[in-house]
Image (cartoon, rainbow, N blue to C red; front, side, top):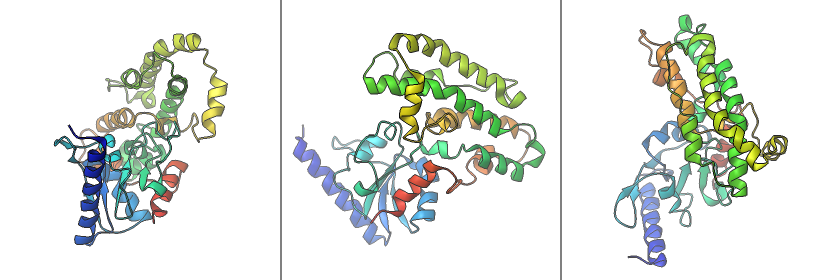
Length: 293
């Protein structure tokens, strides 16, 4: 079994190799992502805020020998990063927890939303893409209304989870929150802009969180104020909620909305483009990239 110093030396050497690859391939830098799908977000961001050719790394070999991906593996390199080799990761709850050492000064760039998927679920952009690509279906569903309702429903449970996590209180894990909010499309969910799906989400979350609020002495106004300083509000809570859950529900609704057409909702509408410079999370993520030395 390797010692801590041997593990550190291993990742330092691997980081040196990746920086060297960037030079050999005449790339601006090598970048370790959490996985291949993350390139949908990060390459578009980089071409906007730090244009160039990049050597993307989707997985690397763990010190134990296995090929490994994900945020934990990316962060193994955090002491050995540079302008020639840096990492780009999902924020998860790191930003809202105010974890230190995760920004451009340490060659670590983050989404400032839960994950990159949230950035593709900005309602105004979704609706614009739908209108442009499939105008005859755009009047059947309004993502502005759906995501406003979604954000409103998840806001309070999200604040409760963050409060309990910050205070070290047991009983509400991230896994539990994810499970309670894992919606599946059901027949009729297109009606009334997804009102039935929103009601199922509300019922699932409130049945669990209402008793916890009483048990823990949760003060909603205090928590609203605490996280407002970090930019979290009822309107943008869906951007800070688990990205897979938000993305999967939007994609599921969109697939049914586009059924019978030659339009792929996911690739033609959902992943059409990013709403650059229109909300603080994407502005902050882009600013971090542009400030890399």
